[in-house]
Every structure is written in C-alpha cells, then in structure tokens.
Length: 128
Image 1 (cartoon, helix red, strand yellow):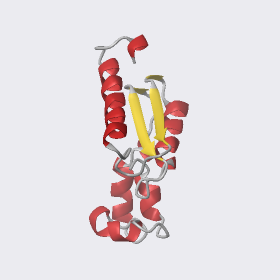
Image 2: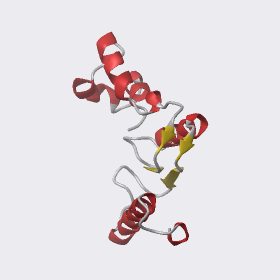
Image 3: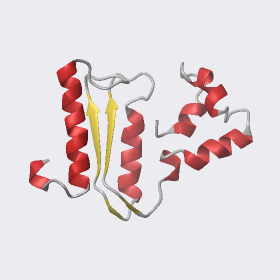
C-alpha cells in the first residue's frame, strides 16, 4: 500500500470507503489529507540515496493493485540520486497474500530472503 493518498481519494474503489474510519477521509478532511500525505510512500519520494528495495506485488491483488508498487518503483528510479537497486517483482499469478500453494509461497519467501541477504552483504551478487 504505497500510493495511500491516491487510493484513499478514490471513492470508486470498493475498499476505500470502508477504510476511511481507520485511515481518515482525505476527501472531506484537510487534516486527514495532510496526515496521509505526510506518510504516503509514493508522495514522499525525494531526490536522495535509497537503500536496496525489492517491491513485490500480485497481478490479481484486489486490495493493493499491481500498479501501486510499479508506480512507486518508477518514481524512485526517476528521482533517486543513488543507492539501490530498486527492483519490482510482480507475480502474475498471485493475489493479496502472495502466491498460493505451499511450494509457490516458499519460492516467494526464498526470493525475499535471498534479496535481503544480498542487500546486507551476506550473499554474492552472482548467488542471488
């Protein structure tokens, strides 16, 4: 959920109005708008160095649409000064909880662990 403000401003999305009690309604409240804007990852990308980032999404996720991480990664790549890499992995067969099936889920966990180990220098680039 990296494009929080745009999502919460779109009352045509089926999950947005039920989320307003928790997140706030930026359509009706300037205070809620400012609060959400202050922490929305997509809206707070700045020209600076970023750590290694692996954003993951599922094509059929009805809660966090696949284009949210794609937009965020595109903005990071266009704006960041250095660091990274910033990578996007979209699972074409996954929904909100990731891949279904025990072994497919374990594959995703292995990808995350391999990236994390590489990002902190515990794995060689060729091993990931």
